[in-house]
Length: 372
Image (tube, rainbow, N blue to C red; front, side):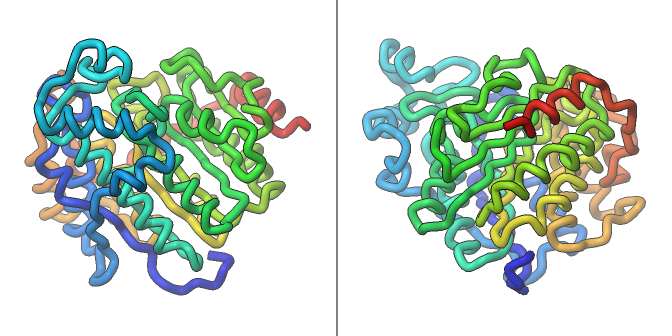
C-alpha cells in the first residue's frame, strides 16, 4: 500500500455461515464464505494471525443507518419465525427473496460486524478482506435482493465518522449497488462506481445517473468479456480514482458476473476480477474488499480465494493439490450445472481467460463517466 503500512492483509470470517441458510430453495443456500475460507486454509494461504473471527454488529451500530423499528422487526422474525403480513409487506420480508429464517438477524448483523471490524483494522492504513460483506441492496427500512442490512453503507459511514475521506466505493457485482448509491446521494465525500449488467434488477444505475455528483455508473450490455472489464478499469475506474484521491476504497466483489454464474449474462473469468483487485491495491492507503453476489459455489469460492491470493501475493498453482481438489469435490449443488460439473471446477483455481473485442457501447460508458 502507498501508506507504507507493512502488516499483512487480514481475513475476517465467522462460523455463522456454516450453520446459516436462507432455505433449501434460496440461491444463497450454497456454501460460499465457509468454502472460501476452507480453500484458502487448505492451500496454506491463511497464516497465523491472518484470520479474524468477527462478532455481530450491535443494534446501536446497525441504527447508524437502519431504522430502529425495522431492526426490531428483523430480530422478531428471527426469534419467532413469523411476522404479520402487513409488517412483512412494509419491510419487503417473507418472500423467497428475503425469507423469514432462523438467522435472518444474526447472519446480516455478523456481516456488518465484520465490516466494522475491517474499518477498525484499516484505520491506520492497510488491507482487510471480508467475503461475507457486500450486502449492497439493503435499504434503511426494508430488505432487498437478499440483503437485510447494508454493511457497505455502515462501514463507509464509520470511515467518515473517523474523518477518513474521501471514500471510493467500487461495485463489481452483476447488479447495481443501488442501496449504497442512494445512501450517499449528493455526498461529496463518497464516490460510488458500479459496473453492472444493463437492464437487470434493480433497474437502477443508468449511465447518466450521477446521484447528485456522488456516482458514476457503467451499465454494460450482456456478454461482457475480460477485455471489456479490463478496459473499464484502465480507461475509467483508475482515472476517476486518481481525480478523487481516496483515503479509503471499499470494493464489493460480487462474483455473479462470472461466465459460470447461473443468474447473469456476463462472460467474465475470475482472472478479470483478480486483475481489477490488483489495480486497486496501490491507489489508496486503505482497502476493504468484501464479497457480494455469486450463486455457483465452485465459481464463487475459486474467485474469492483467488482475491485473497492477490491481496497476499500468494502463488496460484496451475493445478490444485489433492487436498484442495477433494474439498471442492465434496460440494453439492442442486442445479443442472451442479449435477454434471466440468472438471476444471475441481482441479484449478484460475479460469481460462475470456478475452474479446471491446464494444463501442463499453467505450462510450467510459467516456460518459469521465466527462465533467
